[in-house]
Length: 459
Image (cartoon, rainbow, N blue to C red; front, side):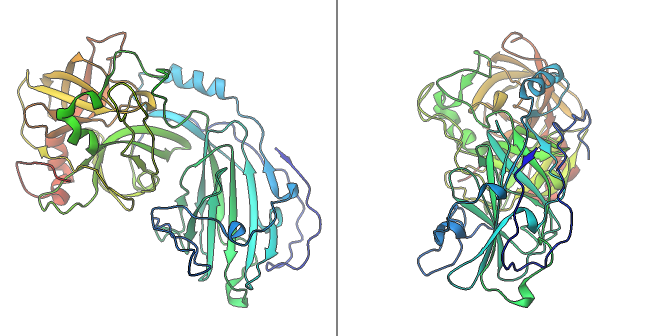
């Protein structure tokens, strides 16, 4: 890592540090683990009566509001290049092992304190500390934060190349000092720590948080409709099937971090017996296996084409996080409750707890290889206590489809989530296995979704 040396600085709100400058170590990749066991409310900075942003929006960081000069080079940490080709080859070698689709890895930064950044006063008596981190070649970046203890009147703003920031305060969105920032696009992320007013009570000798690691996405999070680049050519665009619009709108691609990897899977929003729009979301356990991973979820509900086999498929904004409610590895399910985010136009899918016979016609909605939403049609060929086995008549699944919702074709009710299988566009007769919703229901989901044999969905 190349880091420009820093010169002496004028008055600073932190006490001076008498420590030697040190180079930060870099870890080029997180290891794959074959066994994946077991909010933030983002508000705009109120600097004036006109600068209030909605909860789901990003806003200008303080430096933009106060029109401060750009950061100097000495306040920029430049990491080395990742060998993304080797990481992709590593991913390809592990396809078929049941792991989620990895798009990024953790990079260690070492100890970062106030000496690394640039500080300056604001015209209204506040103080700003800024630091930029560049990870060349990244499509997106996230930061893992630990030990957040920001005092009242102090907030951390994080933003990428577009200059619009998310705000974090106190002990973070989950009140425990740990959180992962929302993804920013591009190869640079800037942190701004802002004290609205300087006082002895609001200052600390060190930064009131620690950067545990930086997540570097070496794959683009989404895909392009015009370029069938990642997924196979036999997939079916869900937008072409108007009868499945509601179930399409209940489905999402999820992005999350776990075991030092940044990965994507699929999942489904579920209704409860009260029809009260609590955001219960079903994912695969081999994707989301514990509360820590659930807290990092970003769910992309609007990632589908606006025209059958054409038009755009925009990821849209996603700032969710989730509370882990119930899960089991044998039935491969994890039920979570998303903690924030707008759900306009999102459908809360109905479900059915019955056991269906072989031959029952079904459909699955999913995101193969981080591509836009697809649908596959087939039928049940086998039933075990925990799993359905499915064979396809149109469409298949691929890595990234994990957790995709399985629905009955008769009533369009949710009955399971994708675990694993051998189907692909080069093996369209191959089977896939799905964790049974009936089993998930008896193993803990019932306590949250309510008592019923089955229910319909709702907007």
